[in-house]
Image 1 (cartoon, rainbow, N blue to C red):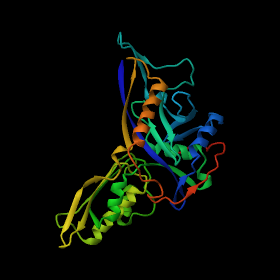
Image 2 (image 1 turned 90 degrees about the vertical axis):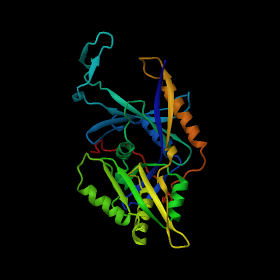
Image 3 (image 1 turned 90 degrees about the horizontal axis):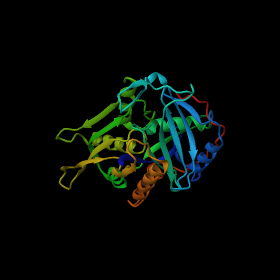
Image 4 (image 1 turned 120 degrees about the vertical axis):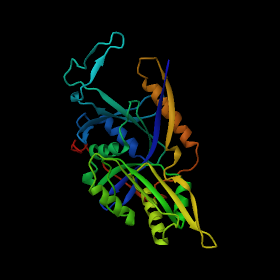
Amino acid sequence: MAIISKTVRFYDAVLIDSKDARKSVEPDFWTTVIDVFANWDLKARSGRVFEVDYFGRSVSPKQPPLPHLQVERIRDLAEQLNRSNVANGDVEPLDFDDPDDRVSEPTYIVPFGTHGRVAVMSPAVQGTRSETLSRWLTLVLGLVPQGYSLELVPVVDPDVLQKIMNAEGAVMLEVHVDAGVHVPSTGGGDVGDAFRSAQHHSLDEARMVFRWSLDRSGGTESVRDALRKGALWVVRNTFSSNAKVKLADVDDDGRLVRDEVRSIFRDRITKNVTFQTVSGQRATDEAILAAVGDAIRDFSKGGPTIGLQAAGTVGTAKVLLGAGGDGDGS
C-alpha cells in the first residue's frame, strides 16, 4: 500500500461589490451552488481563466456524506503529455481514441458549517490556486452582471488580528503576492499605494514579495502606525495568504518594545492529511473525502476563528444563480 500525503486549506467565501465593500454569502450559498451545478449542462459549468479551461461538477456521495464541487483543470494537448511504460521504458505520446478526451486535474471544494466556509484540497500534484478558483466561480456563477465578485479568504488567527488592532505600531511587514492576484484598488494607506504602484509596473508572471523593516531606532510613530494599518488591510483582504508582521508598543518609560515575528494568517488554515491506496493505483473518492472530513473535524476542534464580520465584512449578500457565466474569464 502507498500512503499519500496532501494539504487541506480552509477559506471563507466573500462577495465583493464594485465599491470594494465586502459581504458574506448567504448560509445556503454552497448548497444552492451544488444543486444548480447538478442541473446545469457542461457549457454552463465551464469557463476559461488565464487561458486555461476548467469545468466543475456537483458530487453528492452517500459515504462519506460530503456534498461538494469538483473543479477540473483541463490539460491542453499542446503540453506534450506522454504515456510511459514503467516495465519496459517505452515512451509514446498520450493519445486518446476520442479526440475530445483530455487529461484533467481535480480540486475538491467541500463546504461545511453555515457561514460559507469551505475545505479545499487537490489529489493532483499541484492543485488549482484559490485565486483561480475565485475567478472561475465568479465567472460561471454569473456574478459580475449582479455587481459582485467572489473571493475565497484564508481563515485568520483571531489572536494575531487582536494584537494588530491593539498594538501601537509595527516595525516589520512582509507580504507575498502571487502572480495574477488582484490587489484591492483602494485602502491600505501608504502600504496599499505601494502595492498598487508595484503591481502596475510588475511583470505579469512574477511573484512579488514586499518587506518593510525599520532600523533599530524603530522609525517614527506615524510610520509604525502606517505599517500596522497596512497589516490590518492585508488581513481584511484576500490577495495574500503568506504574510508576517512584527508589532511594537511603547512602554511607560517611552522605550519601544518589539514583539516577535508573527504569521498574519493562522497556522491551522492548513491540515496535512494522509490516505492509502494500492501502489500504482489511483485513490478512491471515498478515501480522499474521508481524509478531507477528518481535516474538517480536526479544524473545528481548534476553537473559535475570526469570522467575516470581525474581519471587516458587514452583512450578507444574496445572489441569483442563473444559467452560468459567459465562459471566458481570461
